[in-house]
Length: 68
Ligand SMILES: [Zn+2]
Image (cartoon, rainbow, N blue to C red; front, side, top):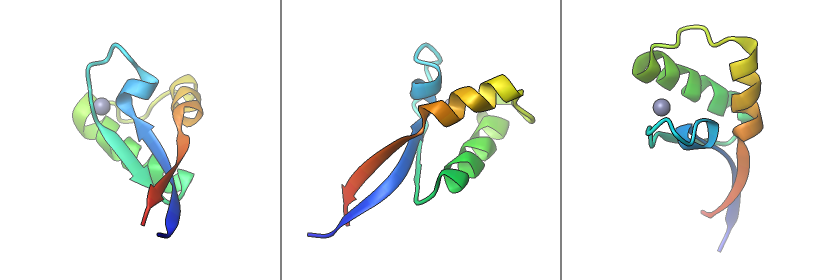
């Protein structure tokens, strides 16, 4: 069975007490950041996250391997 690597990010990874179970998975970190940005805008009304938040989000991205 083929394995595929993804980048994964969950709201709970960024803010464990946030209570938002949103999770995104994409092939590249850039794509994860884009999708997470859309989610942040819509769900958290965060239109332009400050640099410290972006750094926290980037640090929370992890690599996962999934059966393709
Ligand atoms: Zn969220």
